[in-house]
Image 1 (cartoon, rainbow, N blue to C red):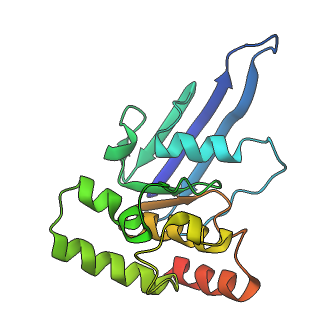
Image 2: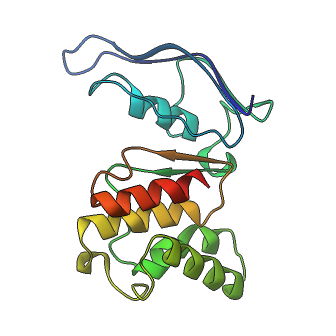
Length: 183
């Protein structure tokens, strides 16, 4: 298996008069390389917490996360070779579309030529060609969602995690994006 979760558990400690909360309990999952899976369940059942643990933004209370045969529980997010698209988009308001998408590549210190090529490719993929110089405030919710998706895809991650990434797209574009994501 490529990504394995073994007895993954997350318990949030008591706070604000609320007792401890078991957000995720003993999740076991084996995912093959290239496989597309969906976590389904009602609001509050632990889907987002599970994604955040896989990405390294939350530490499990117990259990193991194994990627390509190696335990990654202790690795910080930037060393996991994963990208996550958040439900809230998390777009940098002070950067234009191109700069938002290029941000991770700039941090990796790739050449300007490589950055430009990869950003332009992914802008085309998410149907935002010609939008590179626009500010996030000039975009619709669906366009902002596509910027967030493009920012994740441009990193060419081993694992792409998405928390309701297509909810603000119209039906036709949502289907096109599903097809592209499956590639």
